[in-house]
Length: 67
Image 1 (spheres, one colour):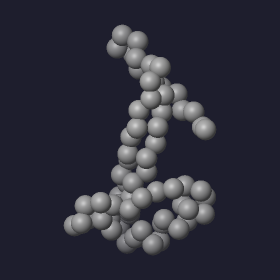
Image 2: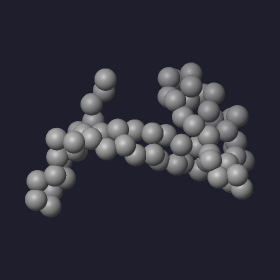
Image 3: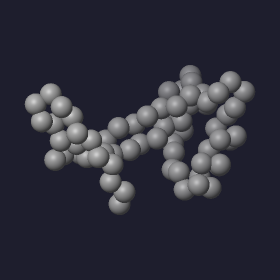
């Protein structure tokens, strides 16, 4: 079994900014990061996550583990 790291980037809905959403996520213990690309950095945020997987033939078995 191996594990993989992924980063998901989510764009804010029109009319909302990081200051509208990110403090609410932090209150729920969700750690996120702001955007990296200078021209659009205020339009999205990033969430990183890890999961364990096992590849058997062409079938991928994935499992989330809370640590």
